[in-house]
Image (cartoon, rainbow, N blue to C red; front, side):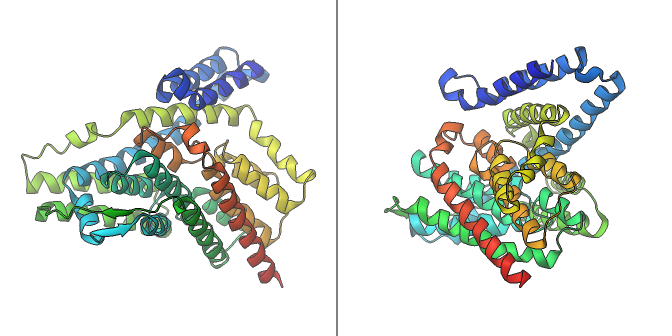
Length: 411
């Protein structure tokens, strides 16, 4: 049964890769394979697991999925409201000049995504960046280059802060690194982002001419925009000060938005914005996380700590980053922490960087990539893979930078 489940999980991931060939929406195929493996897991549990053990495993995975689902729903509803009211378009219209080179826009996109993801979570950062880029009505081929940069940048920006990436928080809570130590990741990660922006922008030689428009943004819509901003800040503060889960803070912010709009404009169908979010994105997430959860239950991730028995620590950390593009970096990091691997501070920093940024190498390797793939129809596994060489170079340069700074620190 273990072999059967592994084959079905593999087919689930392959269905994402061949979506362009079979023309079946990845949300449908991943949900089918994800639910199928768990049905079989209950019908014939591997290793003679009891019903209680199997049920506990499913409930644990569903809790993780529900947390991400609810967070994503809240963030997408906020963005849907702001976008429909023209607030995001108006902000772009005000901040960007009438004429801007495509290369300069690439650099600004990378910097914005990098900085914003250090304040907000990767999903919110990706949603906002994609909404802004789509509003510019760029040609598809060029838009894909900017989206690739956004995915890499939000992962790189979050890796250096405990509030920016779950794996960074896990390594910090395990006592392997301190907050000041994590600051050393900022410069190498930023260099990697700027290098990728430069490589992606090389074929772009045109200028963008933006049509300046007047957007009539009401006082009430501005209030909601500020609420969104303060919800992001409040999520960070509440998590640090009181360990409140980000999903709870965002749901609270969303409920406040509902109440404020109700009192300001009773005729506004505010709950309709929940229906405007892309539920195929949520279903895709559900399918992918069910597949990843099955890999976790089958103990596949437990094999990766053995890499350190055959490779030097730094080489193993580099490879783990590559592996995180295929497997969820949270259970992968948990498996490494539980294995009792002994590493120096500089080596733990390289691992923090690699598991945080390595997921960018494949579009299915991070939440940012999955969100982007669901929001931009032209972004598929195959189209993203075309930029894998650039992404690998940027990831490697950042990794070498972390190693160099770590060695300087240890002297």
